[in-house]
Length: 222
Image (cartoon, rainbow, N blue to C red):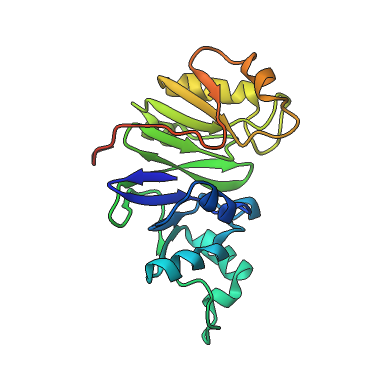
């Protein structure tokens, strides 16, 4: 979750979206931004209805055309012409590779990475960046990460994987970005325990964990 100027925004709504919001006592949520359409990143969208009720407004959704088509398949009732009472109320904002502004919040710079053959969007806000489900990234998109000081990036496991960075690839990517601090996320059970992974990491790289809070500098220009 990104919190700027008193407004909260989440990137993706996984299967445990509701639990996360309750666990962290999130009372207000302005928007959901989707990286891609895989189930582990969209499954919790139905639970935005609690915020619809509490805040009496539509939930702003930001996604690509491709993700929108997947949401229409997964949550057809949300997009039905005749809507059933109590369904999630959303307002869709289509995004691409250009910067866009979140309502009442910051500007985000999308960063396209490839999840095997599927395009996925990472996002940069100020000097912070979040990149998930990446296997490759073009030189053109790497330029968008210039000057990033803090980054969160996927590292599925030690051994190679067809659609995710393994540890070696994630560390190479981090070295190219050259942030002051990096965190690994999207870690599988095949990687080992927190302590085991930490023992493999160089200085400046840590394992992300539930409840981690990161403070970063934000301004309009990226």
